[in-house]
Length: 421
Image (cartoon, rainbow, N blue to C red):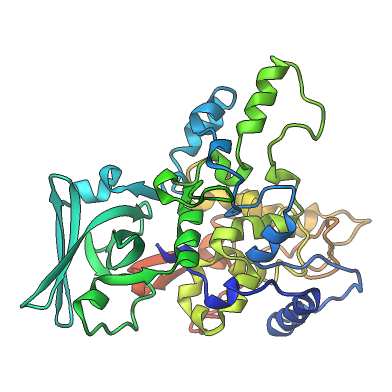
């Protein structure tokens, strides 16, 4: 789905340092999180800026040198069998599939929907699946090439025409068990069959789609070559191409590698703010959403978890390793849906007063913090100490996606309050 949609602003030249500072000042003014310490703090950056800085290291959506640098999950499984086996069951690992492997299409071999004067249909053919639109007199169709999204909430289809990729006007939504308008197309009012069938993804937009839903679609040497992409977010999408690492391990023949020579990127070494930006490369950093401006207001932005998290009072100025994406979600494991599974994460900061040291009083949650690390204590909840997320990270209905999303803006939710952007 459109979790990776970027505005045109994010494809322009990189912001200069002064612009970053301005963005941070604007963010502080908007969220009421002005620096109290006077200590220089790390600030969230746009994904394009992170990639530009990662000249000698990896970053999600960065282009590798060559497709041959990637070895695939099977090679990773030779040494990391447990992590690989669990990772392939995650939604990220199934973020895209070629049409022949799209389970939703196989389970729904015939679907139809109507929008305005247009009737849409998807049906199975001997060669795969076709997608069409009709105005009652004429019909236009195209063969589906890719399915983006695992469809636990929705799935969008890409078709190709004259060597260019188009995003289908209609997507599958799990809540409907059928088709409705693709998220982001709500305001579109097509007049012709061509416009009604779907939306052209210009090369930068198409590359960003594939960069977040597949692995290795674009390389420096080969350019944009989606036919070479590995479907889904594989090990190498986050850790970088593994070719050099595999060669090194073969040469060592079981001996330990010297520190810093593994030829593989480990996101665990990132600072808390960089760690959240790392996930934000596809789930959107605070700055990515800020650049979208009016395109990211209202409940629809609950899909952008890093942005919502960094707007939390808990976040303060960042720097707390207990408040990152990977502190609560292991990217190698399927997502936990039971709210009780996260209680201990919340209680790591918000414990009862009797557990606090008598000689070391608790520090306010939005007080001094730095990228070097912090140790903060939050107030204990006076209501309960279980199922914390059900109250403080409420489900938000995104009507255009026919689904609820967990709002990662951690807060005290009051009845009747408007959705806080």
